[in-house]
View (cartoon, rainbow, N blue to C red):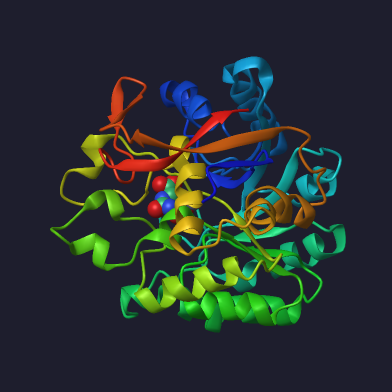
Amino acid sequence: MIQTLKIIQPDDFHIHLRQQNYLKDTVRYAEKFKKILVMPNLTPPIVSIQQAKIYREEILFYSKNNSLEPYMTLYLNKSLSKQELFEFRDHNWLLGIKLYPSGVTTHSEYGIDKIEEYFSYFELMEKLNIPLLVHAEVNDDNIDFFDREKVFIDLYLSRIRNVFPELKIVLEHVSSKEGVEFVLESQNIAATITPHHLLLTRNDLFLPRLNPHHYCLPVLKTKEDRDFIAKVVLSGNPKFFAGTDSAPHPVYKKECSLSSAGIFTSPIAIELYITFFEKNRCLDKTVIENFLSVNGSKFYHLPINQTTITIVKEIQKIPESYPLGNDKVIPMWANRNLTWKVISN
Ligand code: NCD
Ligand code: ZN
């Protein structure tokens, strides 16, 4: 039985670090990873290179030994000037532009309403080789909540792909069978996958009783969806890579009516991914390493990390909560035992 895994240090290509008095903690929690791709949904959102630069410097300031490599995204809306697109490629720490349909998730009120109005951006991004990162869910009360991803792909994403075939797109936190199928059949499209979409199903939202700490967007789907996502990861397909979507909210915003969406996994995410691989009897170093540490860098044309980490078979209890500024955040599987532990990096 495998007791130790030594792999290239993993990257997290989708993380929410928040801001102000939460930032110091969230940066520390992310530090088992080497590269992190930081989402721009702050208040106000990051819509300029200058704002992204300042945010990145703050992140670096809090990073111990400067070991973390933060990469940044800009938030697509009308305030994002086209001039920024022309200058985007001058900064090697800028990786993509994030599309949030308005109202679909946390701080997406600044997001976009009519996708067609952004086709001129997509055209330019295609020309300038700037990836489009998509939160692929429709915001429509008439659509069944669990179908939001599928419908967004049918109505919008497939159209964007067809009109801009050379545009690099990342279907962020893919959560459905249809989402995976769409990536598989598309040329320039990749997807990030979270630990929770690999380990949980929508039953975990309701059983044993309603659990707000399992509520995230895109919402957890059926076992069939989860198993389909698992299969593509276990197959070693290079279009899929790790992005935790670790999205901390203070306890008071989770344990209340109108609970916020987001699952916090950052400090234990590598161990959660390894748990997924073990559960599926695939402790195959190459498959694990490609998914956690290689595929994403290749997609974004970044160098592969020189550093490694060691993960050992050892029981560690997930804390009941973690400090988040003056508040607390409850992680996925709080108080449960993990059987893997990252011991060095
Ligand atoms: C994210 C957040 O809280 O910022 N929430 C979530 O459930 N994933 C936003 C997002 O990525 O949708
Ligand atoms: Zn996210």
